[in-house]
Image (cartoon, rainbow, N blue to C red):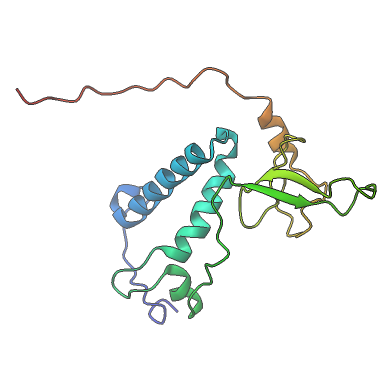
Length: 170
């Protein structure tokens, strides 16, 4: 299987991720992209898991393997990925409401934010992160209870960071 997919096996010591520079670089790239997406969308850090999943999804379809000039998706599936449907993370979306009994002239859409390709949009009015259930009905009311608990842990003050002094040339 590995030789058919162009995978070269290399051995390293157990529990030493430093020896796998390719994976470490890929993880760092993913975390940096996730941080950028959250900042650009102006979404709370509580959406970090959705942002990481979206980053992974997008990077598997757009990053090119230099040695074979193909995306990871293309290497694994044998065909080029469709990317015409990709949307910016955190962009506003309208969710079509088919469940509520709406009056003749009431709006049939709820506002939300796009937070991933395999889950439903985040509805600001409910302030809950929906669970990815595979159900493509964006108005389904199944929510992740852990996400509800995370909403109560919002920190109002910025998280302190430690910066190392940068040497300057004299």
